[in-house]
Image (cartoon, rainbow, N blue to C red; front, side, top):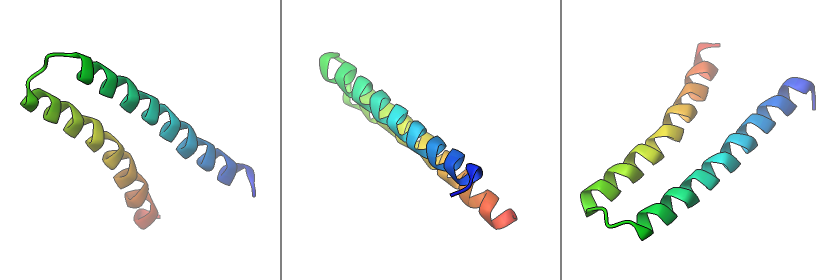
Length: 65
């Protein structure tokens, strides 16, 4: 494994771990709040679309190169 592969792996694992902590924190806040159902759905939609953009960027870069 060269340094570029190690950096890429570290990036994905680090971002994945950070994202997991964000999901747990938001889940706890939404569970304790008195937010309406539409607001909770909107929060989860935005939260789960953000990594989709990150994955789409990686796929796009793969096909462009």
